[in-house]
Structure formats: structure tokens, C-alpha cells
Image (cartoon, rainbow, N blue to C red):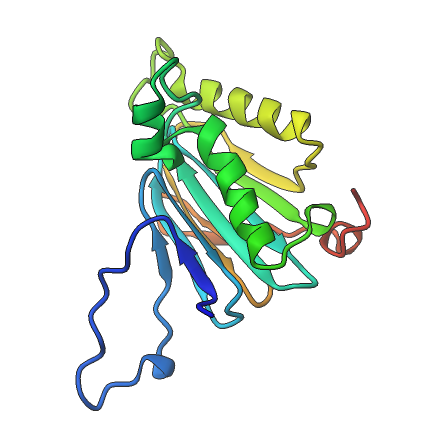
Length: 197
């Protein structure tokens, strides 16, 4: 069974002759409006250039299953099932439940999940006319609250883009700012073990 799940078919080509994938594990890249879930302890899930978009990272410390969603907008178009089905990961209301279901399918348990959020900046909309980042964040928090999911860490808002990565084996979550500085978002041990939920 493949331990990595994506909503898109793989476009990776096999390694060149004499080159081993095991020598340098490639990160699983999550594009805009995309999602990846993995139970491979050697994998790393990364998404780049989060502006008003938000990344939702989840990790189960017991099953070592991790997932990352990069959504663009708070809600799928009303009454437009076709738009939602075309790419449900674009929207918080359709992508978030699919991220969690994908993790459960690979052995994660809701009660043990460590949940972290990043993004939601006002990068393009500095005047705050549309407030996409704030609307994304509000919609996501409402979805998680209704589902009884606790957020263990977040780096949202502001006016800078972010890149994030999740190490599936360890659950370590890193955020890189626009100047290239990277920092780890740590979670207290009691929360990482699922005891804070």
C-alpha cells in the first residue's frame, strides 16, 4: 500500500539510471488548492508562498501520519457542486474535512491529532478591502470548532508570505518567512501526545 496520498495523480518520473530516490528523499510538495497525506516516516510535506491562503498541518504522534492542506478561499461556491468537486481543496469548507478523512484512512485518530495553522496574511490586499486572509482564518476556525478539533499552534495574519514544512516521522513543523529565516513551531509535550484534547 502506498503510504503517500494525494488528490492529484503523480507526475513524477522514475529516477535516472544509477540514481536512488532513497539517497535524498524528495519533499511531497503541496500546491495551491492541494493536499497531501503521508504515513512514510522519511517524508516531508511542504507548501510554498502562503499569502492569504492557509496551510492546515495535522500529525498523529502514535500512527506517525501527517497531512497538509493549502486552501485559497473560505467557502466553495454556493450551489455549485461542480466547482467544489473540480477542486475541493481550494476551499476551507470542502478541503478541511477531506484532509482529516485522508489522515484517518491511513490510521490517524482525531483525538491524538496535533493541528497547526499558518498563512492568512494580507499580502495583496494591504488596504483590507477583501480581507481574504481574515475570512479564510475565521472560516477555518469555525469548521474546526464545530468538529471539536483543537488547534495546537498557529502563525496567521500579518502581511508576509510563509513557506511551511511538516516532517512526517517526527511531527516537527517549520515556518520560513520572506527573508529565508526558518523557525520551528513547537507544541508542548502534553499536546503532542494527545493529552491536551
